[in-house]
Length: 425
Image 1 (cartoon, rainbow, N blue to C red):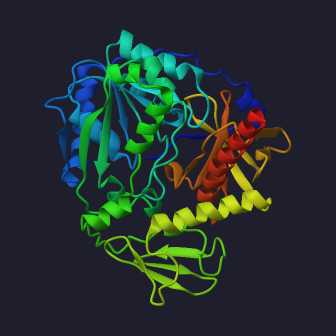
Image 2 (image 1 turned 180 degrees about the vertical axis):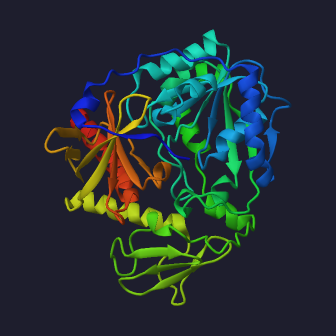
Image 3 (image 1 turned 120 degrees about the vertical axis):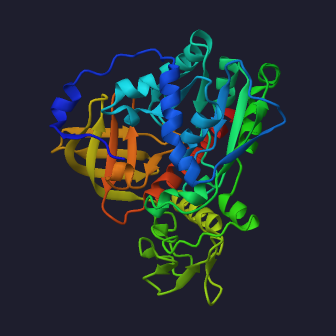
């Protein structure tokens, strides 16, 4: 999938009118049927099946549908399982570029990832109450990098209270193993299934406090797709299964070097210390000397701890040249030239466009970071922004966007804890 890119001077981009807010649109049966039809090829290829847990049928009343996020097949699953019931889809704004009419006709509600969007709750309530349609939301906001859950926003419990509707959970199995984000858009032959169950009744949403709701949400979004693969003997025989693995495993646990690892074919190598691991059919990394980690999420968790340590001692720094695209409307993303992105304990700072562009985001401005691999086939990206514009920053090849995402998540937690300590004092 590609996106429309237009070269334009920064000043001209900033002068463009911003899109006027539009209320959500209820999908017609025609578009619901169209979405179901175009989803069938992928679902058939994945031998998709699902089951309802603890209920005989899907509820008739509008509800909030929450789903873990692994790959594009997630939307195809819901479009098939819930057909012909109408539902709106909370969707990232860049998905509207060049196709706003179609996306709105499909019931999509645009929002900016990891950026406070004051209109989103109102749009969701309008869909539920006025349009009498359910709403699909991926609360993780980004695909999983390492097969475990991405951090959830702490305001979800409050969101459930304000929406005041039943909450369904759609949990997928095999979607990550079939098409992990790091693997260069190469699909594997893996069966995909889903379980659908009631996460909260409307009465439970009303009676439970926000903290309890958040805790139960965290529990629902606790998973490890690599462990699931191993325990269910899901064998991936494709010879490209380690391709791109350096995107998440960017640091060698043996020599400590960064940006020197490479996943290719069935093998993963550190070019700094010449150690090599073989990725077996169950997703484990095997080293002849028993060094490093065999479980990929353990390796990623170690990298998180390393980033945390760097933040605590003040040595963490991302400072890289970037190509900059901007999103300010739904007509195109605008190529405004080059700049420099800097991230440290004070947050993000972006400068560019011959001194015209200067943008900053503090550590507490976002609980997470929209970082992505091979974004619209353009490259690995780090996105920062506010309600006025989103800046898509493409660093030099080899710069690990995963580290920036880990750093943003850990820095938010650290600064949040520091602020609480000051308030208590």
